[in-house]
Length: 106
Image 1 (spheres, rainbow, N blue to C red):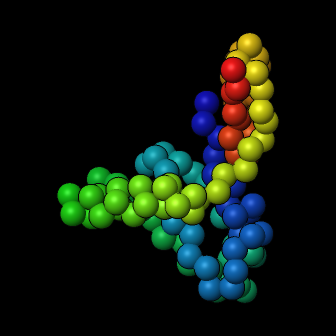
Image 2: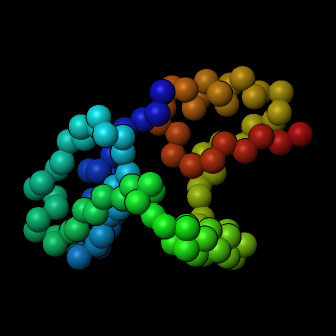
């Protein structure tokens, strides 16, 4: 089961005037911590990939690929486990709360 977005955690780390892009299913009903939004002049913007055109998607793919190649999206490593502990890694993910990568090593 996918964990819900934690807007409160996001708001704790963004700067004044930040913009947070939201993606969710039509039935999502997240809690909006309004007290943390308005005094910091934060904008919340919805995004539906189905509204993007081919040119937008292609340009985004190029930007993401460049960012990945330049390591511009650092993701913290939560755990490094030997391959023999793959089942444990799956249990960690299923339990939720993993914030980052779980790296499996030979």
